[in-house]
Amino acid sequence: MQNMSSHKLNRVVAAAPPAISIRPARLTDATVIQAIIEGYAKERLMLPRTLMQIYEQVRDYAVAEEAGQVIGTGALHCYWEDLAEIRSLAVASTHKSQGIGRDIVLHLLDEARQLNISSVFAFTYVPRFFEKFGFQEVPHTSLPLKVWKDCINCSFFNNCNEIAMLRKL
Image (cartoon, helix red, strand yellow):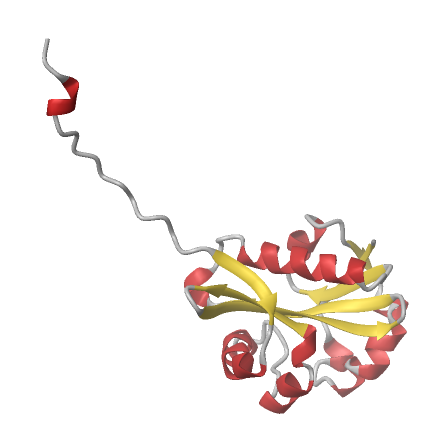
């Protein structure tokens, strides 16, 4: 019988993929956040955000980070003591379909709970994505704060085909 310790086993050990973490955005993330959003805005899949808007609202944003690189973003924007919106949810095209958007939404919903927000909404072209988190379609008119604060200034105001989704927490 051969001594098992005398045989060297050739094993291929695959390197673990870099961990993805979700964290609050920093001012130094603003240009990358804008670039990710802009990719979708050019396709008319979301509204563009100026660099100034991102700087002013950086505390609303969370980012997904992998190996020190921002690869996704989303914001929780408060409207009232009991109402907030998930917006600017975008993942770099190189990292789509990896669950990063899901992780950002879960992070933002957790943040809403910590703030004691009872309702979170989103305007989206992908309602099935938000349905997975318990969001339900509602009429735009049920969100007058959003309509009169943001939508009124949108170039698609009278021709909006985004779906309004709401989730009670």
